[in-house]
Amino acid sequence: MMNSRPKILAFAGSLRERSLNKRVLKTAIRGAEKAGAEVTYIDLRDYPMPMYNSDDHERDGFDEKALKLQGLLTEHDGLLIASPEYNGSLPAALKNAIDWASRPSDRYERSRIFQGKVAAMMTASPGSLGGVRSLAHLRGVLTSVGVVVLPQEVAVTFAEDKFASDGWEMADERMKGNLEALGAALVEMLRRMHASN
Image 1: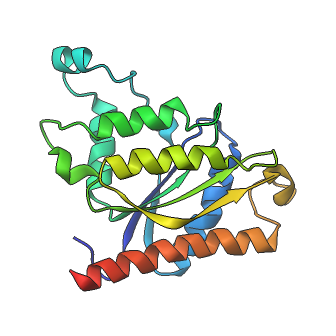
Image 2: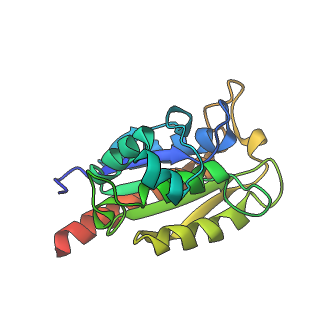
């Protein structure tokens, strides 16, 4: 599927409009784009889904927003995901989106959605741990659905202090470099995997 420009789908687990994780993700996206990737950014707020319940799925059919998300996932080679930490784990909205997307639908087989994709993960928090506990759980979830997750990950601690006055541009040059390098590492891995196929 992949041409010379890897296609990456980027999203954050937070539903907040000015989420720290959305802001951190934008920096990693720039790194992936500089490395030559074509990146599609989506906001999970635009894909509201009911909590996954197989009884509802069987009775009502596959959720329309989940089907759109499945379509996007099948069109991309890699994933850039920023996840906040909610009570030591990933947010329910992010887990629910993965749960829905991982189910077979009338249009997509289960094996086409996540299997063989590569993901890079990051997190941001106003606190001293940077949300890092969420990434261990997210790594387990992604691995279980067939995603290869890069070993490197970035946790942005005291994240509110690392942005310029407008709140979107990363002012901390070292952290900016780390996030852009994560995006570039994903592109490099996708190219390497494609070359070996």
